[in-house]
Amino acid sequence: MQICTPPSDHKELSSESLAASHSLNRRQFLGSSFAVAALGVAAYSGTYARHEFEVTHRTIPIRNLPDSFQNFRIVQISDIHLEEYTEPFFLERTVSEINSLAPDLVLITGDFVSLGPLSLNVSWQAAGVAAEILSTLKAPQRFGILGNHDVNVGASHVIDPLQAHGTPVLVDRYTPIERGGNTLWICGCNDAGTQSPDLNAAIPAHPQAPVIFMCHEPDYAEKVLLHPRFPLIDLMLSGHSHGGQIRLPFLGPLILPAGGVKYVEGIYRLQQMQLYVNRGLGTVGLPFRLNCPPEITHMTLVRA
Image (cartoon, rainbow, N blue to C red; front, side, top):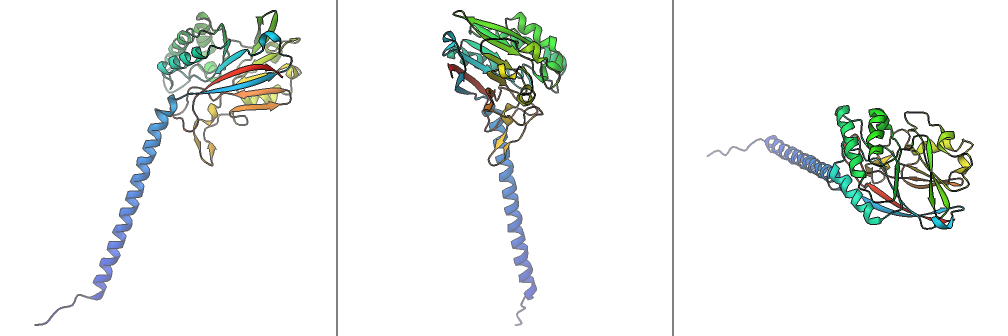
């Protein structure tokens, strides 16, 4: 009987096919694993991470701080962006947390709403909702300023409901806070990203007391530095950057808007003036945060 031996190249072909099959399966597995991981990160950053705020406690030394303002406590929040994409329940949680801190003053540094993919009517209605929720703040006083989104949806649509619900909006204005016969000046300028602030109107000429200045865009500090009234400012408060919103290891912040590129988050010193940049509560573009939690800043003023 004759035994037929298969050609040797048939075996080689089978081995090559098997190796190719294993390689394809490996690539498919790695691709599927990456897709699952990406979906998991997106789900985490869009649900849990976006709603877990961080309370940052800061002691702020102020030159010539009057005795009656020693240990005066201020809470800053920023960039609420109701309701694209911040939900009312999250702002309510934030207000509840602020009330538990029992600050003397709450300052809100702009972007109450968003100019987003939905209609302007949605933004205008959201401004009213934000105003109602913020009216439940229990601090003795609160003030706000406008951000670029507020101006773009129509400043009056944001200012009117806020002021009707007890949140004064400082647009190139300043106001004194009186305590124990002493004064602390709270100042706010128009949005620097869409308008031309008038710093002569926003900062008192002869304050003879500490000055806290609010401006939505932190990089505008470079222009404030050049103004004759810059030496009068002790503390500048800003938002706008969202801290980058998504921060990856070794890459840092991925989303930085114009006006919030140089000063991204936290405390900076520019000569005698301190600048604090709050990461904000909300998001824009995409409803995601990663390694960059929403922030409530709790500041205690002390004499320098």
